[in-house]
Length: 151
Image (tube, rainbow, N blue to C red; front, side):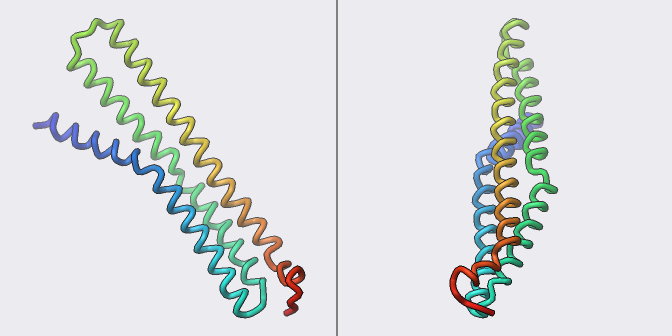
């Protein structure tokens, strides 16, 4: 019975990793909301200072994402999966010790590739959010000058 619970937990973790792309979707939606909450009031009031303010909110949101450290959570979950796999391999395989070590090394290498890809993905997302937010914050109010509107 304990093994069944263990495998259910492992399957939940695997489903969690299948849902990693949801973070990117959530971030895109949050960025869009942040930008549109600045654009709409700016158009209505003809004052693009509101758009500039939305950049400040976007920067705060980007820093919040960095602070949440999703990457660390994913790495912790990968470690749990890897240790569970290694334990399962040792307990349920009739291979010799050298074969088991070779399999563990191969799987560990694949997990490290996932870690690297995840780290790059999150660094890119974090950088883009903060960079775009900073540009909007610093230059968003200049749209008035380019559009010919004056406040």
